Length: 472
Ligand SMILES: *Cc1c(COP(=O)(O)O)cnc(C)c1O
Image (cartoon, rainbow, N blue to C red; front, top):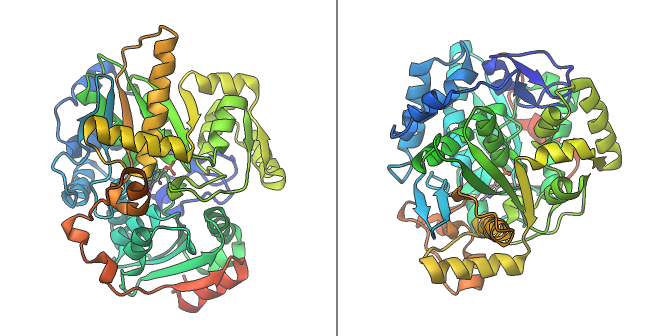
């Protein structure tokens, strides 16, 4: 499998090259040259297999000569062996139509573990074989950082510089990052919001002098391999509910458009997905884009679902690339205009094409809290704020369909993206119940922390990293 940049200028790479590069050198994102496709019989043959085996089959077409079946199996066995649930991603029924796919049973209690536990092992394998080292730089609204740090702490050949918005991640999220004291882990709290942190990371990649001195690597969802690992749970959950013989629908709490893009890829690969509901909080750039063609950057408003407090959704570029017929040069021009004006219009034909698979909903904090109370009262489930936003959007979608006398048959699966104990204050405010951390994290709030605070300025961050990182 070969990987091309959405902006058409960067070198074409294999899976290893795309994984280690992260962001493409032309500012674009790597995508497979073509989507592999399974026949219904091939999908049916995955039914009933353990998660690791489905993961091997789903990921194998993407890895070419870089990771064979045995290598993938070894990586997934180790990565998902650390999960707290034997199913890895258990499916829970809420009512006749609605299900939750709990993708949060990894070490740091959010779904980012599914990709990053595997990615950490892939990095180590690729670097160990070539004797290289990498400087991972990342921006996090909370969950990516903790998952990346857990996955990469102490790994040979990898240094991590993780930027989080100072004071805008929950105490549990911050401590999951800052209490990891391994020498290869560096936490930097940026005086700004998540978009500022993400812009700094992109700027470092695009600074040729800086990128020339350090072998930069990315673990944000701009890294293709992360999205690839996330395709797997769309397959396992759809198979559990009858795919390929029955279609399913998903509601996905969305920020950077990574998780839901993995669902889009699953659909391209032949999984019968009737609908993907993109759920946003008040930071609704994706809802505006999909419902009205208005992809324009607003001002980030902090909410109780901080991992979705995003007004530039990096991975949306991957969808735009497909919607515009994979014209890299054309997309490069549009993205340059977006970067200059912070506005991009989705032409009507592209919006209509997207609407065949995607709908969207903006869920405010009152509806989020109502949904948490509904789930607790009706099903006994305590939801985290992100999951509640997904479920609110899911229920709105099925109610709209019912009102249109379009009963639909597809079960609606909401991706439960975080454990409620990761966001105890918001859960307690809505439900009156403070969720307890699982035993393996019970002493988190008393562990010592280490991090530095820095201004959201490129020079300051580059200087910080240059003082510490190992050059090429
Ligand atoms: C990262 C995250 C999201 C958003 O996922 P994207 O891939 O950025 O769209 C939603 N919920 C939680 C809990 C997250 O950590």
